[in-house]
Image (cartoon, rainbow, N blue to C red):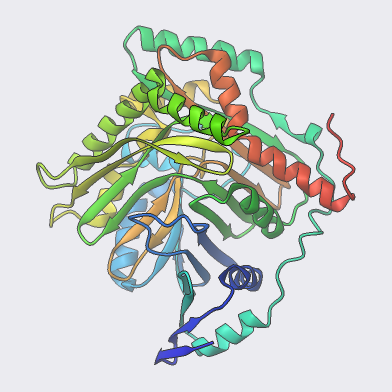
Length: 452
């Protein structure tokens, strides 16, 4: 271990086994009341700055009352006061502060619309080094405490066994297929061009260790925008492949996903499926509509002529699926506050549809569960005002007081969508959720899994 001292509260250390150190740091974080852990799982990309970030402890925090209708202004003031690292989440239902909309569906998680905190300790992870920023104790002390911490014991999953049959669906398959027909009717009438329709899978009386569950989920997903977030008695366990928006100096970048296909059983089949996704007229149609929507959203914040599509229909491979991802970039106007740039693009078009407002009205009409943090965003803001936020998809959200575990998933509906095909896509996206539940049973009960 080589230590490079900046001052007693900030230092950089080399680490021989970064994966082990990340596991130890995550286990160490379980002792804090507020935790944000963001993990790229070694998906290095052009716009990624960190292998991982861990923020713990709240020096100060904000979670505006829903009735205040001023969450974005509160965040602006919070940043202006602190000019420090801030970590937090934005829920989908902030839409109600941006537009004349509402959210009255079932909500068993009960999160505020927004939460940000100024951490007591921030750890930056790179390939071989970590940098520790600590407000109250020497950075070397934090490093030593983490090194002395054991990784989490993954042989213990829950106090109460969860079986596959315990997973319920808020919408039956029959109702789902019927709803797709109604959405397509709206598309046929020209009310919308595309709509993201989601359904909830959930477990009641779920007594789980969310830290262990996240590690198991992350081993399966290995997503580039994985996130664990603890706020009071609520936990986010996120395996997102999608970036919402990042800011680097005056440049902002969004990378919406539209288009999903399974991985192949062989190298040859895998390549064929990638080509199939790339040439799919339906997926291209979905993707380009969202690209246009993002371009329009960026146009509210960026200099004229600076918004462009850097990559269209890029095909990227993840553990269980291939995805079609496009990249849109723009240069912020000098007078635009970075929080307003987030607000002007929110909620992300990949999770609404087009046109955005009408799509969100129909989402509220047809869906049965309040989205809350699902299809919201989690990320960080640096002291310099740069930021990076994901799209909260492929995520479990857990209310430990209610013992309620939720997983929502969905897809973009266009005129030529197949109801059966859309339903199968939902199940494909829920595969990681089912797998981690089944694997947890295997570990707890020596492989005796109930597949009923």
